[in-house]
Length: 420
Ligand code: LLP
Image 1 (cartoon, rainbow, N blue to C red):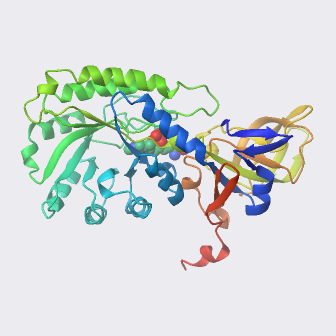
Image 2 (cartoon, helix red, strand yellow):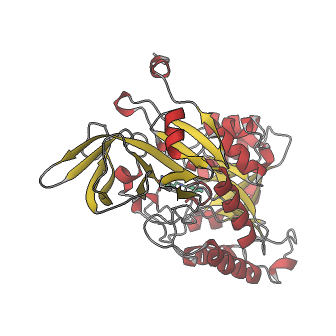
Image 3 (tube, rainbow, N blue to C red):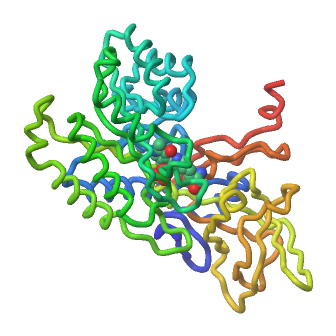
C-alpha cells in the first residue's frame, strides 16, 4: 500500500488525516486521494525519463476529477482526451488546447468538429476514413492540424485481455499496410500535417520489452517518412498484488532505445531535420496509488463455509474486481491485532459478481461498523463508477497533509431523477 497510509496509535491515517474522522465528516463510501502521492509520481516519472524530455499527456480516462486534473496540469502534464466530455473538463481545469490530444477509435464527425472548435490541434487517427474526415474538416481551419497515425503493431502487452490493445485482433488502430500507404503519400491529405505514430499497446504493462518492440517498429517506419512525434501511449504499471518493475527500469530502457534511434542519419533526415519527440500518456501510473476507497462494514455473516463482510461500497463504485478479477489491497482502518481469518468482502449490489475482495485475511475480531480501506483505487475507480441499482456515486476527498477537502460532492437522489 501507498507509503502515505500508515497507522498512528492503532488508527489508520492518509498523510496527516485520520481515516475515521474522514468517514465521520464526509460519510462512506468515500474516495480519498493523497495529493503528495500524485505530485511525487509525476516528478519521479519526469526524472526517470529526463534523458529524452518527453511530452507527458495524462490520460484522463483514468480519473477526470477536475481538482485532480488541476494538480496534474500544475505538475507539468498535458492531457489525452477521448471524448468531448473529457475535453470540456480538461479545458475547465485550465489545460491549454495545444497541450491536449484527442483520441479514440470511434470519434464521430461532430466530436471531431467540437475538438477543432475548442482549439485542439493534435489528433490520433485510427482509420483511413477518419483521416479523410479530419482532412476535410481541417481544410476549414486556419491553424495547422497534426495527425498521429495509431498503428496496431500486433504486439502483446497488458495485464488482462480486456486491457491489451496492440494485438491485431483488437479493434484499435491502423494496420501497418495502411500506415505505410499514408506515410508514402502524405500529400493525399493536404490539410493535415501527418507527423507521427501513436503506439499505445495496453495497460499495466509489466516490462519495457513491448515498448522497445514498438520503438523498433517506429524506427523502421521512419525510414519511409521522417515524422517528428512518437507517442508511446500509457500502460506503465502499478503494484496491486504483484511486484512490478520500477518506473526507472522503464526509463532507462526506453531512453536508451530512443537515444540510439535518434542517431544520424535520422537526425540529418531531409524532410525536417528535427529529432524525434516522444509523447507518453500515463493514466494509471500517476493516479492509481494516490486513491483509496473507504467503506464501512454493514453486516458480518458467518456461514459454516464462508465469512462475508457486506460493505457499503459495491461494484458500481469500483468495478475492477468484478470486471477484470482485479486484486486490490484491503486493510482495516484500525490496526490489525490478534488472529486472522479469511473473509469475502462483498457489496450491497444485487449480483454475485459484486465483490471487492475474496479470501482476504483480516482480524477475526472485525465487526459491523468497522471501516475498511481499499488501496490503489485512484485509477479506473471513480471514472468507471455508475448508478447501477440506483446507487449514488460516492464523494471524493483530497488530502494534503493534515487538511482534507471535498473535490466532488456525493450524489443525491435529486441527481438521480434530474434527467427524467
Ligand atoms: N492512451 C490510450 C490510447 C489508452 O487507451 C489508455 C488506456 C491510456 C493511454 C492510459 O493507459 P494507462 O497508463 O492508464 O495504463 N479500465 C482498465 C484500464 C483501461 C485502459 C484503457 N486505455 C482497468 O481498470 O484496468
